[in-house]
Length: 299
Image (tube, rainbow, N blue to C red):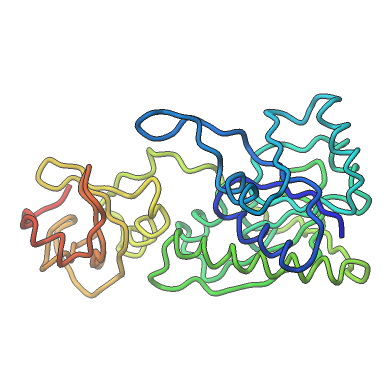
């Protein structure tokens, strides 16, 4: 098929690669514009932009698709379908209608659960047992379109958002290739009204650890916010990000260090497996503890 690809972050890159590998013609790649990054604050292309250039594909990065000129440029591509994955811009109706077979979105949840911006984070933060990928026909709503294909996967007991992000990216790449192969025969299934939840953007205010919460919730917070923004606590007056953890047996006052990097919570305890001091690299627990002993209580 002749495809318009719309995506921006690292999550989208394997999808673009899979489409090309499957033999589809990518008419153009749309992504967010380069933005200042790094110490020099020089404009840096997005991961999709950089990879598309390496692959010799045409890249477009308009700041909006609301104007008639931008919409005419999309229509002029005469595409069969648009594949959209974590693009970051709202698609007006004229853009949704431009490809002959419409626009397909790859969404990293089992819709209608976790519509919105941060479905991977929210699934782990909420202690969901499973998540997955949905291939959805896009409409004017927020992730409200009919689902063409879905695939579920368990969330591992020690899996972080970074881990799950990478797995779901690969799943999305495989599933969209299958969807395009089977598109004429796929029956769109409207999303049910029951079970709708919204995955709001992650706020940094959610990152401070409250050791009075149950161990399962603290563990979900650590894994769900890893690597960004990173759940954190105060260790001897310094902010430390906790990046990996697991629930373990243990009991004590909330924040009490029981042994090694095992910390008591409101109920139960968690063992920190990876942590990061400000301005330092992430370290596994044993290495972190060699740098400086922990105080008796974390806050």
